[in-house]
Length: 459
Image 1 (spheres, rainbow, N blue to C red):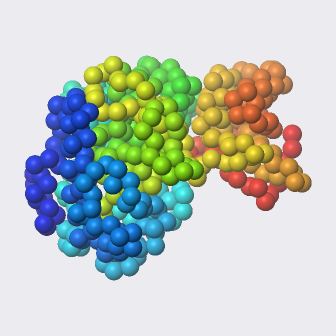
Image 2: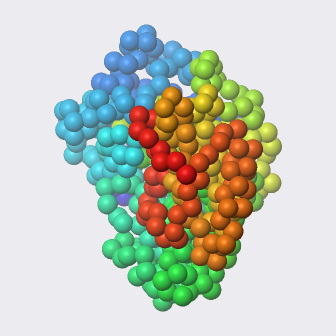
Image 3: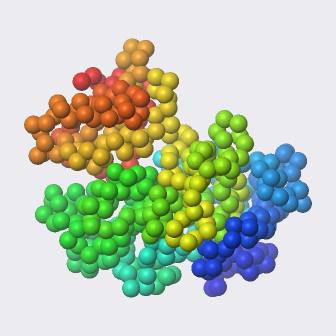
């Protein structure tokens, strides 16, 4: 490997890197042995080199030699974003007390999108970035990306990590990459028409937005372009059946999901078998599912909890038992693709901090998306606002009605209300908006607002 290796950590090279197809088919027992071995190393690394982690573990009276089993791992305190925001900005600036390497070994800066608060800074060594690229190589290879593919990435390259690692992961497996950063949506579509890429990476919102722009502004049918496969990331949608169906029908391409985060890395991916879930890259991550009420680890399938995750090889700012707030559940079945990496059923099904309690009922944004995207009369864009009228909670759904369906407004509203009530057990106010009037998003969509102290306009 070229580039700088984090000092004092070269002994991990033997099992840290690089892509090996045999890892994905290892027996479960062998995978668990590898995970435990790597966890003990990264935990010891964080304890010795991060003042933040050492203080956290000393308060819990846990030291590296205490961790010998998976059961003992669950006793280690978890870390969340609020804790990371507290230590950043301190010395060594700007990363603070969790930095485990000298500043001169940091070669890359990224930060979170800031959609749930102040952005979190993420330093990476060259070795870390190679590791993240390797994680993405697993993602893309499982989704049938090959050296013969030409990949278009319509992403505004900046400090937000988004598809940076996807770009380098595609290069690593031999693909030709077209960076479509400094272009508007129409120019990106015309570049796709010109260069005929076979693959695309974008958020679900932008995949649908590009298709709408191609049809409405350029008179192009996206399915007539050369794109054969699309990898999505950044927000839920690619594993929501109605959204996946819309994308696949619009582009005439296979759509695959991927899960990752700036602080974690690319930890999950859908494969070509499309089993209704995502594989956890268990060679590079340890995923635990924790009951949101009891805090106990969930082992059994089809029982939802929040994901606690460890990146087993990330050095500059370790991700050890990170509380992602993502809601997931284990699948009861192995994947027909033959990989032994476990499946997360339905992918990420929401976030603990995204669940909104309305009239005593927990409302998941993904449930609304599933309903709206199943109506062909509606566009791909919508907004939900929760507010109050007097002492009563109310939910307003704004959706765009396609021009050809204007005469069906009232019957559509009734059908939509009924389906939402069946799916969510809640009543919705519906506003049908003119086509093209709601905001469009290039990266993460912001469709849900809790305005409990404001007023929602009535129908």
